[in-house]
Length: 137
Image (tube, rainbow, N blue to C red):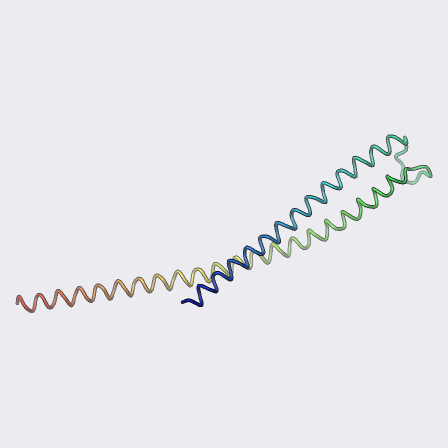
């Protein structure tokens, strides 16, 4: 019984850990997406200042080129993080399933113990009633 309680605690800890991982990855994706939006705004400002929006133009702003490269790198990172997020979500679902199985086993055992206790108490009451009938009869 005690080992199952420890197993339940372990499974809950694993689920919490997986939830934290999923949350951290989601947060990183959100932050990177915000950085991309900021870079887009900065690129637009630079292009407007220079009056050039064609990246192939010889006078295209160097800062804008660097920002575009940074934006592309961030997008690659987001794509990688989204793959990690899918794996982490799968692992979370699996951990939740394992935890539920152990919890259901524990609940089933508790119900059996309760039923056995109820039956023992009923048997004891039946014994007392038979003793009472035997004395009175």
